[in-house]
Image (cartoon, rainbow, N blue to C red):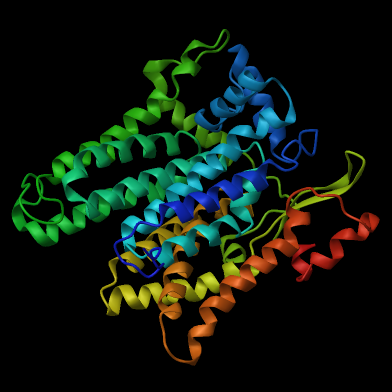
Length: 429
């Protein structure tokens, strides 16, 4: 019996995706303990995890607790050492990669697009780099991918919709409990469902459970799963903060405490050498140097930028997804484009004074979905443009391998000027 082709529409490519995820985790594991010291924003979150293990006092209160709790869990299991600081980001980065593949499959039911999306996200630099550092973003993004997977699956397999929406609500709460960067995309499933109910159910859109978009589930019930449950889970994640030895958070003042967190975030106004803006993220023209120094016996570096082939190509993929969604009725393409636009849109009008390229982690992931759907369409062509699909994927993989030393703290030859060969743009320096 011949193995299923990647073009087979009804054959789930989960094994292909799992293999990519396993290779991704194996690559993360190499030098995960290097640098052997805290670097970049680990200074905030490793310290916070250490204090959290003692339950002594509030620390790093401007961010929610879930990500710091997970970093602390790794340290509780493996001790206070570099691999322990980063084990949970690596595991969650791998889980998030697989969840993203499930999201693309449930949304599109296209084998090739699903495999390409998984491969592109694994090699777009940002997902790999954030999976190797003890920061909060990868936890936020992973829980978000788990939530959107469940939402897409609820629409695809509607007999499972109730429990999948409930699970999505839990994951959305945990995502917000990791970092607030997900707030705008987290609202999209509920708002989108509300719009569909108004269009398809008319005046009875709130309480009617008949017919599309999800038979048997009213908008009122969906509001519980996608609105109330995430909020309850989010507030529940503050449970440890109620039990600090000194200055515990008042559980009855938890809503007011959110305002205090906002004030703390807005108070960071001092300009930083690596700060950037949303349009620079989209164009992939502003880097963040997490590390560049002689450490662990040699010169090493970690620069946060996006894979230029994938990130620049992704913008073309976004354009195609908008066209295919609005003009051709491709709901999968429109959904992925909307996820990207909402995720980046929250930063367009965001009043946070100091922003960095790592805030593009989630929008950049959805951009890989847009690119994969576009490449899937090109791959199926029978004309002279068919090579473009294969060529783009091959180029993205080649660029990832070329940049791997400078995004994974490998040993660099050439001393302090070792980085020059990777600086394709002057703004990456």
